[in-house]
Length: 291
Image (tube, rainbow, N blue to C red):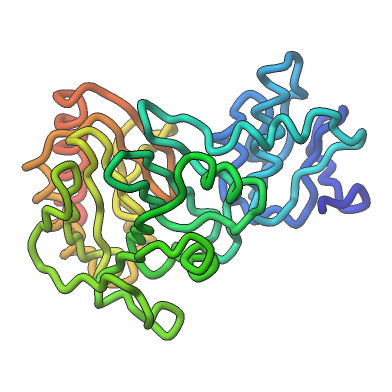
């Protein structure tokens, strides 16, 4: 729980606040942009919610904060109703799970509801209200893990839903040694009619991304959108395996059509397939200049 005694002095006065345990993960700042901002090297409340929509988004961010660094002076009366808003619809049958985990440094995870079997993309916290909602939506058939960093509570989800976990063999560690579907691929895999899993070594050796329905690209830590730069970006300062290989991996993504980039870290973004292709090629041109 957030602590009033540790409340950051950078918060403006009002009910919501951020305390000094904030790890600067950006979760609250993109989930409730009108309420939270970066002040110094941590988040703070820059605008108190002034209507119901802003309050709901601020409470969604509070529930999703991986370190419980967001609090309210007066206990919110509608917290149960806000819990019921998770998972949060992104578009069509794709949802943002919320409940980010400190084990994944607050990486976002997603849920795809599909007749052929629902898919959990990377792992949120194993949170009872979220688990109940996922169960009501048909449970989890597969748990697709983009790479080793964002596995969080994968074991608990597997044990509860009996889902098969998918992870590239090069990403498997002691924590994931019992993965049901280890991938041993160097080329794109047509996992199902609507799903392609693409190896993109770079951030880590066995990082993969998943394209769903030629529309939704789940990119893990490979690509994200920058609101500040207004462009697609890759994380050179957080590239743990090979920047050169990451650049080459990204070049191969121009073979695909998509409208959404849904990352683990960084901001998500929607555009027409033509616009997204242009953004991707622009990102690649920048990456090539850094080699």
